[in-house]
Image 1: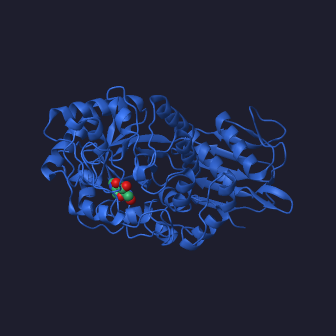
Image 2: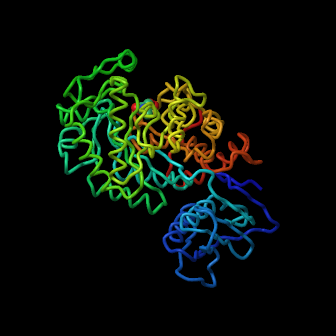
Image 3: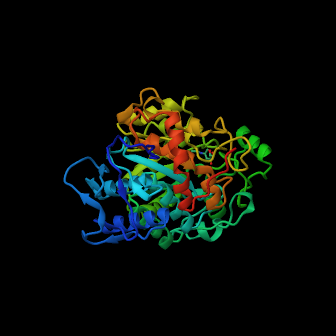
Length: 497
Ligand code: TNX
């Protein structure tokens, strides 16, 4: 018996028996929104009419129960010939049990059935994230919510939204209306831009919450702010054309960034907010203040990456002020690992590592400072978990700078617990898989880059580091087994190389 489960659970015992047959008109009893979601997913997958029912009935064969006690997000599944029961300590656990049940359903000559199993499961890391860059290319609400559904089905519980970059500003703000009036129409390659209204953003937050995901919004500062300067020229320095910026412009064939002109290339590191001008901090107070009000979750991401055109001492001063501002707004700041170099960074700030699986250029040391300050880190090693890297050399989509292309095997073959010296299991809040959007422009493009590598990120975030099924061979077989389920969910799987 094969179990195409990803992420693989903590413990699974296949027991004797013929399994539970799923028949036309089967009902699911228990917590209503989860029962409804599960019924829908099972119907999509099997073509059978499966319904949620408010109470136990003769035909209620799948039962969802909440128990007292148990760790957050944990659940158990017991399937025998009479029923499938999911028991969990909280609604999130029930939701994750339901995702597992959807992966368990299979077909033989007698029709659809759940195999007889006992499963016990809970996550390795509390923070399991995906990131979507809506700045390089803009994605409308329905694309973001579709991506949420894909990620939640793999037990991710945070959606990081990269809401601003050199190419465009994507969230409408009452305090600074020119950001979207003037700076949202552009994107990479001259494609159309776009932005979210407050209502759009609220809809994303609501949809995420209904899938037990927390939205983590990012305004990237002090670099990646060319679009701010198009709307408010007085806040941003003239573009600094470093060797790295010029090299990218040369390779990608785009035009050079020009002050006040929307930027549609893919170079990074040329823009900076003015560090020694109080108007900059009034701007930060407005934009982060409004963002904090719109955001129910505990985190606000302040960026801090690739500020190549900003003097290091100025960068440190700026990140110190930006992080303490976010703390005073009642949120926990998250910053890319470069911010670790700022001695005065607020101690609560969580660091996000985007170096390689073998750290180089001091990135490991900068990341360690977050732990030394008493906080924790999120790991996103670019050469393993950047879903925007080409999956193979002939892929039309994707970048290669992070030792790319990144194969599924490489995406699976790293361990957060041993990536950075001095950053141990308990120092790691979690793992996040970013998807930058220099090349993808549609949901199908996002799918083609994310799948199946997002499944590797899911297993690394959720499953224990070791176990009989925690091998590349087992993982590869299970991923193959999930193909038909993913297709039934409308996911565009990439063609094999
Ligand atoms: C690096 S990773 C960036 C982004 C790019 C990405 C492309 C990070 C914090 N910054 O600005 O979009 O590479 O892979």
